[in-house]
Image 1 (tube, rainbow, N blue to C red):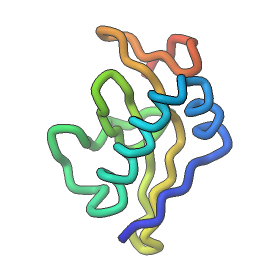
Image 2: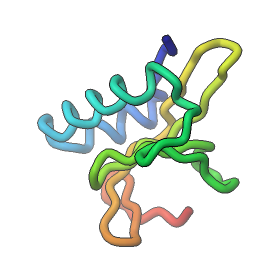
Image 3: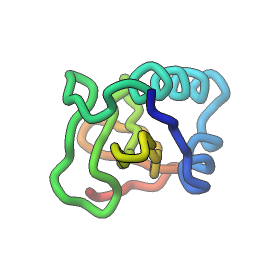
Image 4: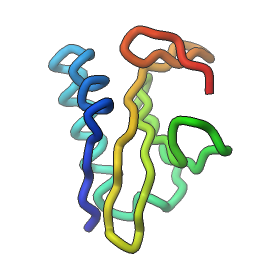
Length: 97
């Protein structure tokens, strides 16, 4: 089992969403990132080098960006955003990856 840690920025990103969306995102994080977070799946993928994170988790229209320290069994969630077509928004601001 991996421990999941949200950075202060990721916590602020999460707080930007409605409570029902927060529950959906947190449930998805727990379900997908506590075991085998580095196993690529339909919803999890290793990203090309970018300034946000190494991995992305797709939860419908939401995206969770995270890094993994396998030796410490630790997943660090760095950012949480919302995808609208090809655009990514974090706390309402468009982000270019």
